[in-house]
Length: 262
Image 1 (tube, rainbow, N blue to C red):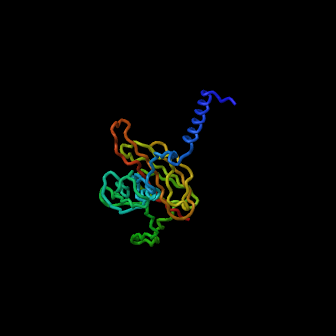
Image 2: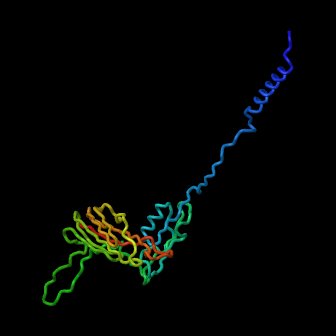
Image 3: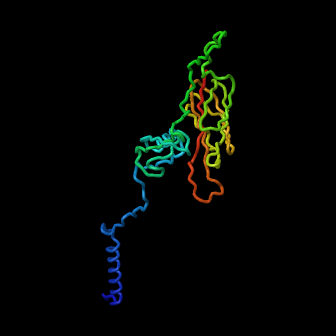
């Protein structure tokens, strides 16, 4: 039997060696296992929220904003202010934008007005105590005056151009409120596109709202006896020619304390 030529034997040996090397080299090895890529995404600490900017909001609205963000209201401090109306938040500690753990309390500083005495009509309810009037000599006693909560019949309307006002309407009647800007920071800005907030929807419901520059008209319907506070928001802006950063509150507000009788 003839033996293969030496060149053939060399080629076969080289092929076998190469095949064996490939099996050994490409065999999976625990030491060469490729690690999964590490994500470079940075996450915020769980439970961390930013303090909302509440400067310029009424105290109750600021408390609502903090609660919606998962924070609590801390110490309330009063301070006089010639810029902010009484009951308006003029500062918070820590300030807006600060990152806090949910549930942390935020301290508020609330304006008492320029004279240092707080005046709030948001919780004012017309008195039901009869008013006693003096009887002129020679005349009979006309009897006690009608209680202040007796409202005029029919639909009512009111124009508001102050920080707070009050009115009265009977159940089933409509109430038209025209909010007029008080010229906050030279009157720059416009009434919010969002409808006024109603504190008690079981007493008063909104029917329509039409903002137009420095005035806005809202129509409500008296649903049931009780009281409700309507709050309209004016979005304050900077003067068009102001090229430097201006510091104004994000909003100003007008409120109407509405009493509904049967």
